[in-house]
Image 1 (cartoon, rainbow, N blue to C red):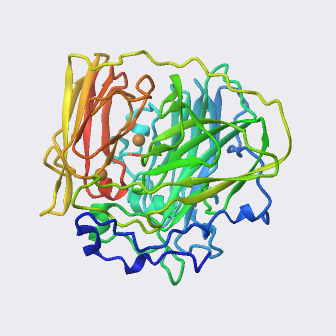
Image 2: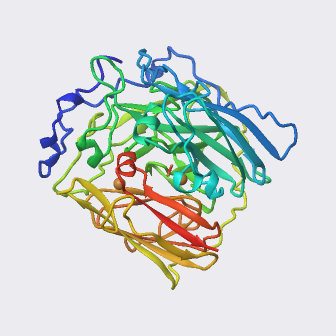
Image 3: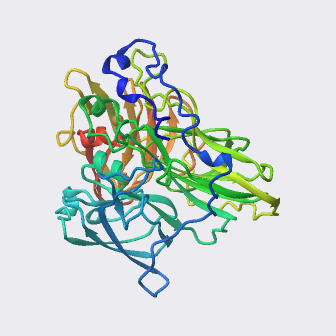
Length: 487
Ligand code: C2O
Ligand code: CU
Ligand code: CU
């Protein structure tokens, strides 16, 4: 593992300014560095996840204890990270599992030595519980506790993470999945959260590289170790014929993942806010930071065989543009986990698509709530929204419960994953095209370079909500604003 780490330290700033040159071209791909299990040495894990224990006996209340603390965890290199952090001593943190309509109580203890807050990414909670200081009040100080409480209005797959100094704390491990089951959801043979993250380690020490340089603030911090569920070397045991639901969330600082599973197809059955009206099948799937995808995979492989989950290089800067960011894992495809088939075959559950809770707009509506402009100020070294950075981005005011369209225009030459707190949207137009997942709820949207994306919603959660780029360096650096949904 150690020797296979790419020589990312030799990459320089000038490399990414070079016109038309994939700066990572000379960097070897980590082809053999992860997924060592395809040699058959490690024992594949059984499918599933461990939810946090529910301390409340009633069926419609989920009450959990959650602690954030320092933890030396091993990303799969064999070297525990001295700067690591975790929820309840695990990376990712344990799954918060509940049913639609449940009340959730999280007794949160901050055992870190700095203040923090928690954000329930994608859930329509109240502003006081959303983890941003403008509405929550004070951060949770070291040694202090805070009780987060909310009622679940949305079935689907979400995640929670710290919402202060995110580029450092999420990189260190403070993120975890949330599963909210829909009524009548039929469990498949295997229901598996797949939390994607990349981490940037120093080549010699294999410790977390120092916090972001000015260059990373602008380009985003790409890691040199690709992890699924907190390790670079997971392998999952499958049986031919089974049906697997992979719940993907991208917890990376800046990396867009582009995944495929050797020998299999991926059927997208849900996105950020639950299940889709129309599932669709793809060979590979791009997931931007903060986004979720629910993917069904039919186990069509052969008993005894291994298949690698692979990640393709995704360039954050415009294809053919004059800027190309280097990727520390190189430009080739990299294995990120392995599926290992046991012997035999099973009939399997198949997949039953739950009835989604999505109206179909399918097209922009008349009322323009706002037109955002994302841009970069190369001189100032910052990425802007409506010509400014936090806290100077002008407030956006929209009326509640009115069909409203939002345009997000990206005038810059790099992708930005745009996230809006507290409400949900449908993406009805990406540069003139209707996306495959248009009839489905989203809270995080890839806005490609020099492209306008149109969102539609009738916002029903009043209050002041933050919106920001989910490239954590951009968000921390002020690519963020507030929107008021007026009651
Ligand atoms: Cu997942 Cu404001 O963030
Ligand atoms: Cu959020
Ligand atoms: Cu951005």
